[in-house]
Figure 1 (cartoon, rainbow, N blue to C red):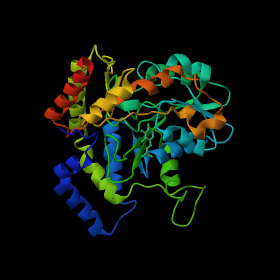
Figure 2 (figure 1 turned 90 degrees about the vertical axis):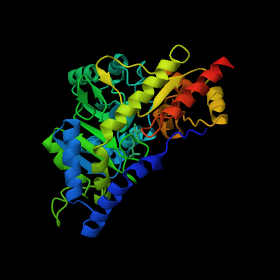
Figure 3 (figure 1 turned 30 degrees about the vertical axis):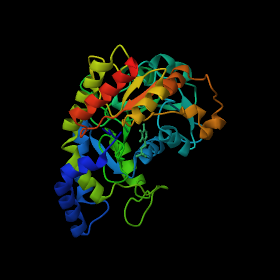
Figure 4 (figure 1 turned 120 degrees about the vertical axis):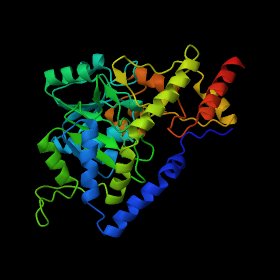
Amino acid sequence: MQVKFVDLSRQYQELKTEILSAVDEVFASGWYVLGPKLEQFEYEFAEYCGVKHAVGVGNGSDALYLILDALDIGPGDEVITAPNSFIASAAAIARTGATPVFCDVGDDMNLDPAQLEAAITNRTKAVMPVHLTGRIAKMEQIQEIAGRHQIHVVEDAAQSVGASRKGKRAGCFGVAAGFSLHPLKNLFVHGDGGVVTTDSDGLANRIRQSRNHGLKNRDEAEFWGINSRLDEAQAAIGLIKLRHIDQWNNRHREIAECYSDALRGMFDVPMEGEDESGVYHRYMIQTLKRDDLAKHLAENGVETKVNYRVPLHLMPAAKELGYGPGSFPVCERLAKTILSLPVYAALDARESEYVVEQMLLYINQ
Ligand SMILES: *Cc1c(COP(=O)(O)O)cnc(C)c1O
């Protein structure tokens, strides 16, 4: 049996008729950018997250950049984030001219509030926790510390549409949150896409303007903006998928439970607190024999991935920041031990059982 790590075409086959008709409607309308589909998508996405505003943008990286820019973060400022993320988290900070500052993570693989305070300086303007794998960071503690130091909390919610903590969904904890709709995220469109959520009218207005060249109207730009918009066809696809996301997230949770029940005790499996509901955008186990296990699985038709193999502070791009091996021990240990198993809504029970079977075979060989 072959089990792919992701299989985007399966979801397409399920929704093909709906998607083609929605896209056809947009194409026939002749209105391709900043139109009614985007407005409706923004309305429904905001409602889904439980926030006042959603602003559709070109991708998740721009979503984060536009938030930081709208908070007037720039050269001389520092923004704290987790070192075990996708490169875009740190790159969005660097793009504003500010300095990315890393803070190690805890057992939940997310920014560790116990270490946050030590990373704050008088240049710190914001902390940007990443809800890695679709598990929400310890936001109450992070918000309490940020409040005391009067710094902004921005969520990197790229992997976490629909994840909740204490009954609140990703996107409504920080002053604003950036989501990605890239094909490798849990809610994806058929190309690049992103969303900013916020309760602030000021931030929402500013970002609506800055995603469209800073234009206030056809003729006047009030400040330098960029071009980063979620186009009508992608917004139409996003609208269709938003109606399925809870069902898909639930299926992710089912697969995760099946993996954890079978593998607990043999591997370090992801944990979940009583008041959390993660969306398992990725399901990561930890084992010292990671590379050997991945090889065994690959030889037996199970595709896996490492998210992520090189910590951000050890990337060549981050060299000037002055970190080195040993700077963030938990993150660096994770980079050597984590392995992501296939999780997607269209993965069937035979396949998830086969993954478990191969994992157990490896242990017992
Ligand atoms: C994917 C991702 C991003 C960037 O999103 P894009 O849409 O690819 O630009 C940012 N942060 C995290 C944690 C991500 O996983």
